[in-house]
Amino acid sequence: MTSLFSRLFGPWVRELDRGTLRIDALAGLLGAVLVLPQAIAFAALAGLPASYGLATAVLPCIVAALFGSSRHVMSGPTNANSLAMAAMVAPLAAMGSPPYIQLVLVLTVMVGLLQLGVGALRLGALAHFISPAALRGFTGGAALLIAVHALKDLLGIVLPSGLSAPAALMSMVERLPQFNPGAVVVGVVTMLAALVVRRLWPRVPHLLLGMIAGMLAAAALATPSSTSTPSLPSPWT
Image (cartoon, rainbow, N blue to C red; front, side, top):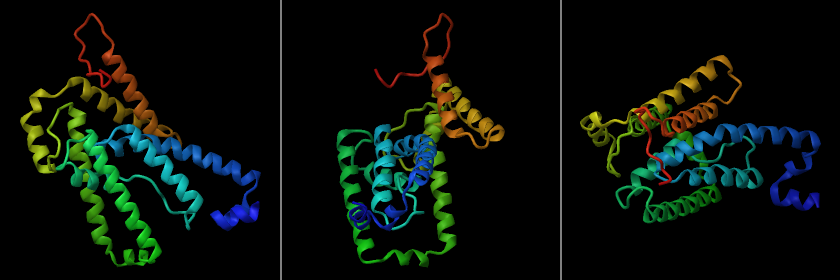
C-alpha cells in the first residue's frame, strides 16, 4: 500500500509517521487560521461571494499538497489574480451575478489548462527572466489597486460595477457625502483590533481576530435600539 501511494503522490509518503502527521496537522491549522480572512478578502476583490474564496483556498491546497512537485510552493488565491480576474470579467457582466460567476469559472478552467501546459512543457524557468523592478512595480500597483477598490467598502459607498481605479476614485470623491458612518466604524474597529493584536501578541492570528472584532462591531451597530445609532444594511435581506 505504501509503494502504491508513493507512486501516486511521491516519495514523501514513505517519510510519514505519527510525529510528522502531528506537525502537518498543526501547520494546516495555523495556515487555515491565516488563510480564512485572506480568502474572504480575495473573493471580495474578485467580485465573488465569500464561499468561492474559501473554496479556492482549500481545494487547490489539497491538490498541490498531494500531487505537487514542491513542498515549499504556495497555492491558493492571491490579490493579483483576484484583481486581474475582476478587471477582465467585470466589463462583460455585473459583479456577483450568475453570468459573472459563470464567466469566472470558465476563465479559471482556461487558466488551469494553460498552467498544465506550462508545467508539461517545463516553461517555469521563463520566470527567471522577469526583472525584480518589474515584480516590485507589479506588486506595488496591485497594492494600490486593492486600496482604491477597498476604500468604497470602508466608506460604505455603493459604486457601479466595472469601474476602473481612477473612475472609482473620482466617483467616491463625488459621493463622499453619502458615506455610511456604520461602515467606517466597522472598518476602523477591524483595523485597530488587528494592529493592536499584532503589536501586543505577534504570534496570535491578528487578521482573524480583527475580522471577528469587525463582525462584532457590525452586529452591535445592526442591533435595534431606542437611540439613533448608525446601522449597517444586512446582506441577508
